[in-house]
Length: 116
Image 1 (cartoon, rainbow, N blue to C red):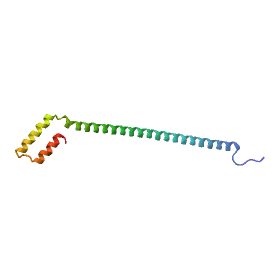
Image 2 (image 1 turned 30 degrees about the vertical axis):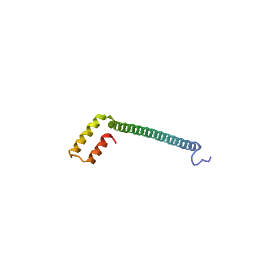
Image 3 (image 1 turned 45 degrees about the horizontal axis):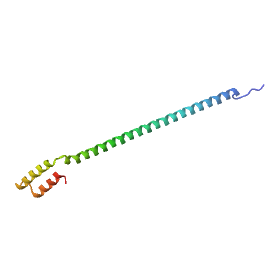
Image 4 (image 1 turned 90 degrees about the vertical axis):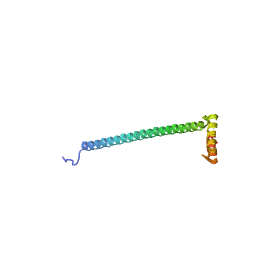
C-alpha cells in the first residue's frame, strides 16, 4: 500500500475553513470600523451645523441690538424739549455777546443743539 504524502484532505479543508473565517472576521471588523467612522463624521457635521446656527443667531441679536441703540440715539435729540433748546441757545448767545465764544462757535453749537 502506498502512503500519500502531503496534507490530507481533512487538513486542507480545515486550513481553507480557517482562512475563510479569518477573512470574513476581518471584513466584518473593517465594515464596523467604516460604519463607526461614518457615524462620527455625521455627528461632527451635525455639531458644526449647530455651531453655525448659534453663530448666526448671535449675529442677528447683535444686529438687532445695534439697530435699537441707533434708534435710541436718534430719538435722544428729539427728546430735548424746545424750551431746553431755546434756553441753551440763549446761554450761548449771551456767551457770544460777552466775547467768550466766536460767531462760528456759536453757529456750530446752535446747529448741534437743533440737530441740524
